[in-house]
Amino acid sequence: MAKKKLKENKALLERGKKSRAGMLLSSYLRAIAQEKTETLIVNGPNGKPLPPRLVSKAEMLARSIWAQALDIDPLTDGRLRLEYSKLVLDRIDGKAGADVDDAERKRLSPADRMSEMNKERMNRIAKEAEEKG
Image 1 (cartoon, rainbow, N blue to C red):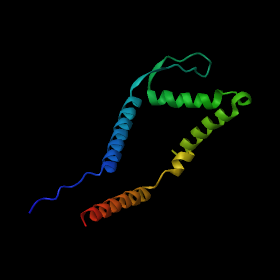
Image 2 (tube, rainbow, N blue to C red):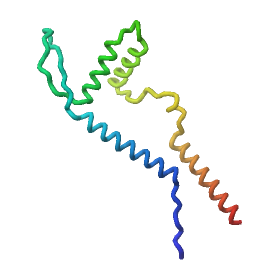
Image 3 (cartoon, helix red, strand yellow):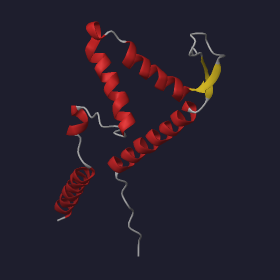
C-alpha cells in the first residue's frame, strides 16, 4: 500500500509561524523589561533628591505612564490625559487589555476561522473529486 502524502495546509502553517514569532517576541520583551538598567532619581519628603537607584525598564515605563497621566495639561490635551488615566486605572483594577479597537472587534473568532478553513478544505476536496470524476 502506498502511503498517502499529507498536504500541508499553508494557512495553518502561516498562522502557526506568526503565533510562534509573537510568543518569542513577547518573551524577549518580558526579559528586557526585567533588566535593571534605568536610573531613577526621586525627591524625598523634604524636597531634597534621594540617592539615585537602578530600576527595571518596566518600572520606568510604568512611571512614565503615570507621569503622562498626571502631567498633561487638561486644558490643552484633555483627551490624551484621559486615555493615560484610563490605562492606569484599568491596569490597577485588573482590566488589562480591555481597550479593544474596532479592528479587533471585527476579527473572526477561532471557531469562525476554523469554519472558514473547513469550508475552503471542503471546496478543495469537491473540486478534486470533480476533476477526477
